[in-house]
Image: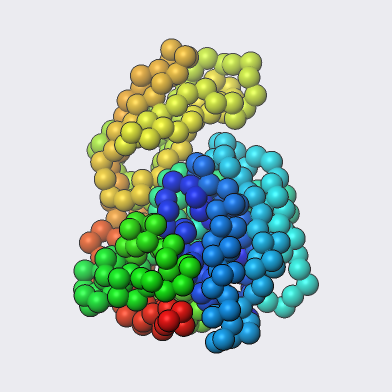
Length: 399
């Protein structure tokens, strides 16, 4: 069975990981789960994993009637680890965590199969593991749900793209949205109707499912698991429930050494990096010296040394955005600027782009594979009936 490790922001800012965790446990007989790492933005902790495992334990007798390969709940509890709870600083990593150490341990396990690291949130623990043990790159394959997670995790992502471009990586910034964007979906399996038609009242996990988005299907991280369950995961360009991707040799990055304007066009999912001049400070590099706000969300900006201060951001969709800085350093206070992001990603080549190795894959740029502005989303949505009805059959096990 495929070896997988989940790094998740379960319990953090978005409840959809609870839905994805329920889905994972209902397919736990199809994969070997070697790690569950809690890497949240916000209040989530590994207890949120453990709470769903408790529900799974209650449902396990009925699951085991259909397969003896479902894991024991205690084995799952033993591999549940706490990861990083803070966003990475500018350099992209901080200190080892129980979660990052577990990634390294699992990656180094003597096994002929690679470890599939399925990232349902930020890349902080993956970046830390790669920093502490770069040799694990030969043993892991990463499928990352980017998009909003790239926005929050721009520093960890930049560290990996710059320092570990030879990583085997699927960067799904928009493809995953085909899991829940269902404009052409049959009515009975639409995001709003699937719960009441196939989940409601079935098992302890089914009773819990309604607590997240009132039962409306989102599960934006589940395509990473679906990719392993269906198709040839060693060929990202092929067909699978988790989407189809294309190789990319660069990750676009726009660097501004002055204020940017809305006439400055970059790609959605780009890394935008601003450098500002200010006083030389007797503080360590990577010290937080200012904040910047975009779309009513606030991020830290850092001292880079030699009187230079920097910040990174990644727009999660095509948009015109505006930033404003605040700082007790007068030269950094009240700076404002804008940008305009467009699709597809990556944008036109730039000398500041991160240069990637041969095993990095991104959303398909073919306009026919877009849903609205979501690049590549049709490569998942086209399989909607197949993967949801397969799941519906498993819900019948609780009747």
